Length: 255
Image 1 (cartoon, helix red, strand yellow):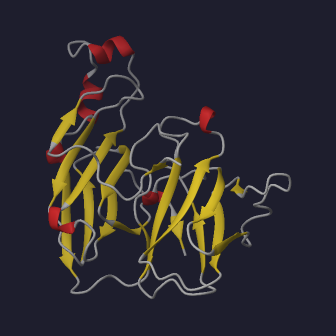
Image 2 (image 1 turned 90 degrees about the vertical axis):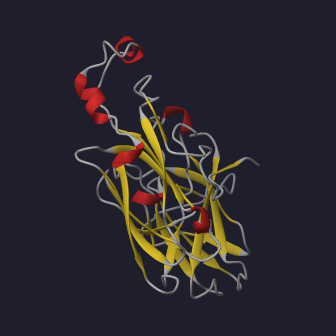
């Protein structure tokens, strides 16, 4: 099974940016942000810049974002913080024809203004002394357009993954729309179950668990000793999804 977003860093190794080549291959930037263990941080884009897709490997999502230019993350000991956090942003640009994007001389100024650089990604952190307590997701979908893959949601519970723990999820994309998913599996001894938010999650013929609105729950049947619990899923209609239509941890909920 090919798992995308298995809590790995983006491939770029240094600060960089790239121009837009199409409305799918939009401009973007990468910045290595200083971040130490046991910090809570706020990542922002400068000015009116907005992102269609972001990634911050090595961090956890403190709370869902309600904007496309500000995100809240934190770190724990042993999760890549010694190297900082590599933050990647694919910028939201106004419509332009491919020939305009291929030729910088023809690229509209409003497109150029919407494309930021690595210096436009900023971070402010606060030391909290110890790991932030609670239940959190790490980023699980590291690049746009990989809609036909299998994704693994890393979940940390600082109180431990105990028998009968119930975790409920609501997966959304950068438009804050729910994302239909299927093949929901818990990578531990547990049960994927319906919650009050769902009418049905299991196909009676195949036994495949799914959610038409991205809402589902998992309950542990016994204690899980690992630090990170993984829940895997696929997009239900990958062929017809928009390029930036996949769920992102930064806009999703866990309780």
